[in-house]
Length: 269
Ligand code: 2AM
Ligand code: CA
Ligand code: CA
Ligand code: CA
Image (cartoon, rainbow, N blue to C red):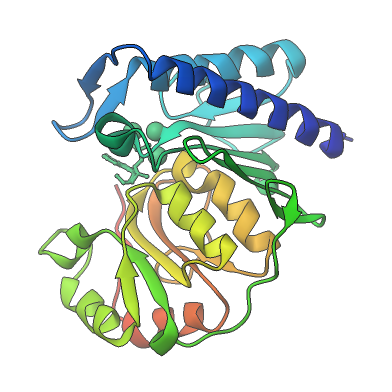
């Protein structure tokens, strides 16, 4: 049996150390390149930070597996055993353009079930953490359970791109939702938008296309607080698959799925 308390303690130390390295790296010139398209950015700091975690994990937990955005981990085809799901920098565009509103995100799963979750807002030095069954915390202070709320009083995180014509959703569905909500916000870091739901700053967050490393950490944290974390059609997420994402307080989650997104169909690829 894994000693989750011990893994939690050591992971927090590593995250703080990685954050310090990132803040130091920001005093040097970044090496920026593009991945799938011109706006899909990656830097030397994304890659170095992922390597930092991989080296630590391999040394300390040689039988754990690693799924990382920048590809330095393992080829993961099943969810068996302990898997670290790592996004070394979530919000790379923010990192490059403004050096704030980016985060380290880590989820640690056992047989596909989230056990530990972390989102570290590096520029604000704010660490969100959770251990399944033991509560969720912001810089060590316990976060309150998420209470039911209505769409009329909800702040909803969504990237405005999804309100323009696109191939993943009939954007008219989102227009209705945006009109009925109290307000919308877009941070540009899926992890920090999930952390914002955890902290009660947002009531929901909607995304159409994310990877497991984008939502792995936040999934554990928000669920630990009684929030709902699913695909946009209400079906369960998987750490093995890219998907849409709906993170919300109870009540708001059901309304978004059943009233606004009843006609939404999840797409493969
Ligand atoms: P990233 O910064 O780690 O790439 C806004 O861009 C949010 O969507 C970020 O959390 C970003 O994560 C994520 N995202 C997922 N896929 C992306 C892609 N292909 N291009 C840019 N951002 C992506
Ligand atoms: Ca990326
Ligand atoms: Ca990401
Ligand atoms: Ca990233």
